[in-house]
Image (cartoon, rainbow, N blue to C red; front, side, top):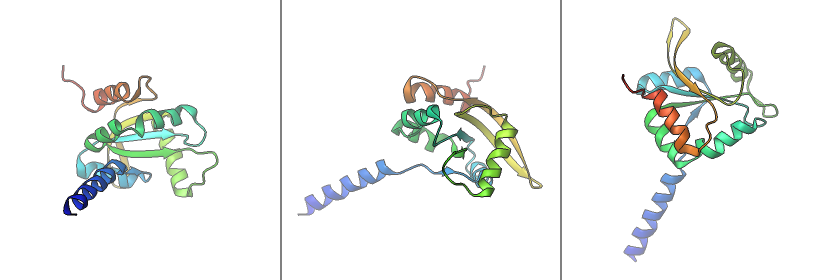
Length: 155
């Protein structure tokens, strides 16, 4: 009986760790605080989650995979900046996202911008590391591009 209990406990624990989701921040100020505390850059995902086909494809082929989740947990703080057409947003989030779209010059979706930032005297200063979008080839191809941005090789 003890063996069955231990096996069941182990299996439940294994499934729980697999199901663990990453934290995607929607409040950029909160994400900046976490980014600075953990000394990790932010991955800012500019998306049209309910209408942009390439955004949905990037989500399904890369951002929801186990490979991405492992890499992201170790390397970045995730920020989703969504521009939905039919999903309601608070005025604060909507205004924040419009301001960030303008500040980063985002003209198409999906765009993934890697950055660090500091907040000083109520103003945010971003330091861009690089950007990408949809990359064909699944998680391995996308993560190769992301890794080169987050951890560039010294020449």
